[in-house]
Image 1: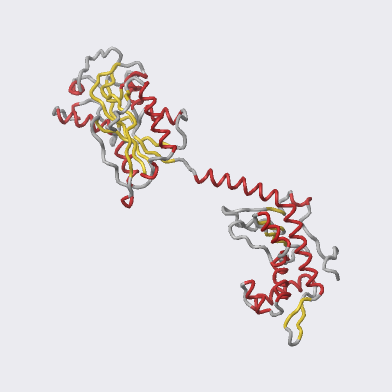
Image 2: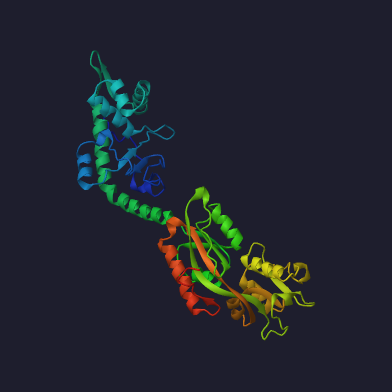
Length: 402
């Protein structure tokens, strides 16, 4: 029986079946192949280029000339429904190795399999196909039959034809996956930050790209940065103080850069009808207050001022009521649910409220030292400083960085 007898071999690689998933190319990053379907497997192994034994020769020459390795094609042709399909490419490689060195032990070493495995593959292929592929010659080892050589030639011809037909689709797929890989590798920088109106605006309006923010208190932001959970941290301290570069896991270096100065104080109703002038007034009978959450540097500043004036927080009605942002504090006052809150002047102006200035602070950005010159970080710093110059209640940081 001929090695290409159509009555015996029923290839399932026809175009009519390809749409149902019989033919497929599946890639891992680096373009290592994974088997897909049960008949035709195509790989473009650019990480470890290697042509099959059956396709050596002109195929390798074409690859060397083009600068890209030829795709390795693994073909499995199924004999009949329910039967196990032999791996024709693997079989052809084994037969070609036998043709070069008519000793099964030598062929097994070339394919990095055991002597027993090599013989088992030949025996199993002959059982499934009904072909007599090899014969033993006394004193000369093992040699291919005419049918065995025809199988090697047929697979080599198929691989060369498949390479010509699939080169462009594989190259296009490789290019698309390379773009996906590049995009995935450049994931957004993670920023844990104390709430700030300008920082929120920059990221919401995409004035700075490539940064993903989570607003928390200054204390929690610096703790997340120290644990390595984020690459950037936003926090604020009183103006005139330059914070030390915060710690990083393993003692890695970090940087700090000032983003803006901002005015903090008491947010009150329009016209300040309760005549609030200082934090001491918050303890007056009948005055309702709304606070920031624990861990917020704004709350820490208020607590310090209360200690300096000897005022116990228990004397302030609403001290235990917490909001997580300056805007939330201002909204509470605007709704009439509180008479005062401690927060940013810019937040008070956003709601048309009154404001009693207490002091100025500087908002800082900390980050991995390796990110100090990263384009995303530089863009973020520039955008916040630009907005600070044009927003009432904010000021650009002095050139000294304090």
